[in-house]
Amino acid sequence: MSNGSSTTESLFLVFADARELQLLHFWLFLGIYLAAFLGNTLIITAIACDHRLHTPMYFFLLNLSLLDLGSISTTVPKAMANSLWDTRAISYLGCAAQVFLFVFLMSAEFYLLTVMAYDRYVAICKPLHYGTLLGSRACVHMAAAAWGSGFLRALLHTANTFSLPLCQGNALNQFFCEIPQILKLSCSHSYLRERGLLAFNAFLFLGCFVFIVLSYVQIFRAVLRIPSEQGRHKAFSTCLPHLAVVSLFLSTVMFAYLKAPSISSPSLDLVVSFLYSVGPPAVNPLIYSMRNKEIKDALRKVQEYTLFQL
Image (spheres, rainbow, N blue to C red):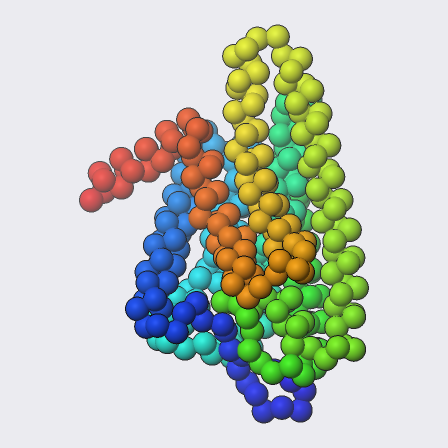
């Protein structure tokens, strides 16, 4: 992975050298992946098939499930293959593709969560203007902007990262290709450009974060002014799943990238990267379906239809 070198593959840090532990990790990854795949697929199917769920909130939820399905499929299958076949190798192009897809999908997910915060703000704070501000065309444009922004960010980071000469070997202390781990292999004088790009994106991240916080400040103010307890409960129930998903996403990502260097270690980096790359896609379907009666009813209909076809 360095300029002027014949190296064509990167090396992952395996979870364990013992074959029994590698197989245990394979089955663990497989169980999590199947749960995430099934949960997100069921939500996508339920929203697509139930006309009652053809609303802005569920349209954005469908997009979120698509992004979750894509992000976990970018990292986990390769990790399973490595554990099963007792290998750490990935091709140079495969590593670049994994970086691009992961950054693309994770960035688009955060932008989409920001849009979903705006959706909840309009629904609760400006309900009379909901149909006007969040019509079908506006929803499509906002979702497309989230996907497009994620694509451009991934393109910039991938092109910039893989244009750097790598002088520190080709062993990545990670179970998937991740930009911070690749930068550790770069020459000391060559990574400043990528650091500058990361700083610029940090400002975008902060802007989205502030927007989400301000949206929920206005939401909570509006909810507390609702006279009936039943109305307040209904309003909170529509916001809590999104707030829980945002909290899970931000807490894992911020801890992964903002933790103090003094507490950083290869083992901790592996655990934290596992939490933020695998945790949200697996847990999000559970969060959204746990207390959402409309999702439960739609899933029940999908189950009944499937059983009837069988």
